[in-house]
Length: 324
Image 1 (cartoon, one colour):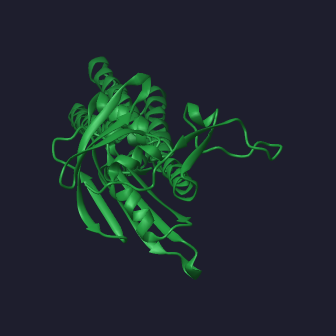
Image 2 (cartoon, helix red, strand yellow):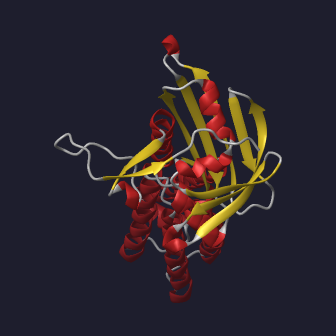
């Protein structure tokens, strides 16, 4: 599964924001512990031990936060830590103005105003970063892509004929429940979903090159936006047909998107490879051998640890489909 370009871009923007604010934190924090009294004087505060401790603590917090943001820029929570630190700084400056710890009130007021401006920027950045992170966690922000190939001991013509009638696809595509032909080059697909539910969409063949290639895509308004293609080519040495499959799903928003991502987004490449192994069995033997475990949702039957097949059931299959 690959993340969509939109999600990747959001993550990059968040990382850039965190890094930029990390540099700002380091620039603001490093001078304070190194020269606390001088920093207190610049802020308009008395150069006593109490203010030196307060200024040093503020500087150390800023420095630690900045270093952390630069080291782990993927964590947007650092920005909220800056917001919390800004609130502490404003509280300390407010205390200084109220308690008489400020000897140059104009400087302290200017420092307070500057800190408030930085705090506003931090809040704005934190809200944006949080929205980006939340969007990145939603399944519908993932584009599910799978590309797999297999060699089948049949001619390209035979392999094409089976694929061309989409009603055959549920025989070897485990996630599909049914495909019905609804018109010229159009079909209605139903996919299995957890807890006995299902998702449906309509699709149309957009490229049909007999014995070479078939491409399809969902129609506008379908529950699931998806597309796919399958190519057929002679294998080297005249040893059957190479079948190349590409499938792409873009899950929608909301609960349906979460459901679609759960169906198609989990190890999409492995699922496609398993479907192709079923297709190979269909083409070469006319049936799919499935173990008791695979009948509950796994792949085609595999040899046991002792090298013997497990208990199998068989799904017979006709490899002479009708054209739509």
